[in-house]
Length: 512
Ligand code: C2O
Ligand code: CU
Ligand code: CU
Image 1 (cartoon, protein in one colour):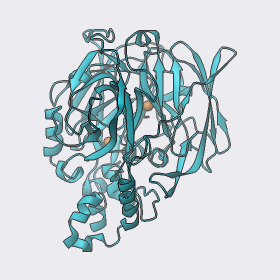
Image 2 (cartoon, helix red, strand yellow):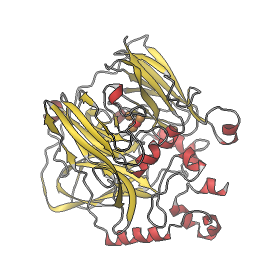
Image 3 (cartoon, helix red, strand yellow):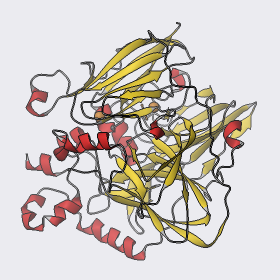
Image 4 (cartoon, rainbow, N blue to C red):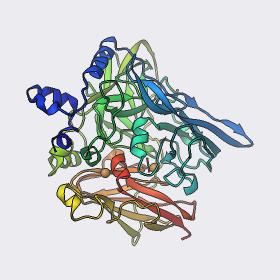
């Protein structure tokens, strides 16, 4: 039992309890990797890796992207090679640039020794092209989905999604960003020079053993809490540094963690503007000092660089969403579940270049969003997120992780949804632990939270939404086209270990 309770606690905390060294028995010994990290800290100055930008190649009016999934070795800290997975890279993947209105073909070659899939998270596209667990790519096979990009400019992402193995594949590195562009966004005076003032920022954390190997799920605790690590990574690097050459930076931030929630902000508490969420631009910039990002969520933020170095961090004061955070920490299990607070990490240090070039000022209007006034009498579909706990898990419930009493079953379609019809989806979290709820093939709007007001930055298009412990969140959902009664899409908790353990369901979109 000791292992199960303590193995999820951060190493930092564990080391603080030096006196209780007995607790360390049976746990991985981190000393050597800790040395590596310490050296990296001293040597410092590792430049932020900026993933290659893949623009694709147009053939016969279709833009082709070649992606190769490979087993690799990656140096998270200089001098230590770790076995990883990557997509055209040693860890994580290239950034794909897509243009609204274009037809695209992805050529995804699987060079792993096992099957996997690649899901286009946030993309509105036919179910057969979605890359969920039904679109397995066998080893040595190439999957070639074709679809039309037809949604507003946004920061989306892709990641592995094989049945019951999503957590491990993403942990090993199978994820990358997609940038969708359109004319409306292109007409705005926003930073958009990739790698210069428009920066991809993939936030994750990992656990390593003494030899610098990735450690994945070693106990029931890791499944219940979701897999968290104590080493923060930014684009796959440990605490890198970025030299800013413009006065404003646009950061496209993805919480690409398996399970960790990051309350992001800057080390000196400087304010920044949120300009976009999962599905694209907000109506207008929203000023914040902190934003809570749960796994799968993205925000685009614009921050002034100023004169002094500063860091992108998580944790610290929860100047945001008091209700949610409060209940998360004060909840019955809160203290145990998340170690009493959210992880505190330093992800990225930003250093102003000796001379910074000026940037255009932020526009005060970004996009026109339809007003949030759902018609009366819309169908309400209910989703109860369920998590069996402790002894009850063994006895009472059929599945420890379930939605509406059922664990994910590849052969069961849980919901049949009419195309192009507004619906209200009511997501009720019956557990005390917060779950980020994600729906494929749509960008929805958040209507209400039982735990408090919907924050201004949550008012835009979303595909993943936090449902706090015991909370009920209502969203307005519509699946615009892509009728296919045979092939399902997924909805699920985006804590990947919960998803893999069954907190997922399937729906088809049919003729209305
Ligand atoms: Cu990002 Cu079904 O997942
Ligand atoms: Cu998705
Ligand atoms: Cu969950």
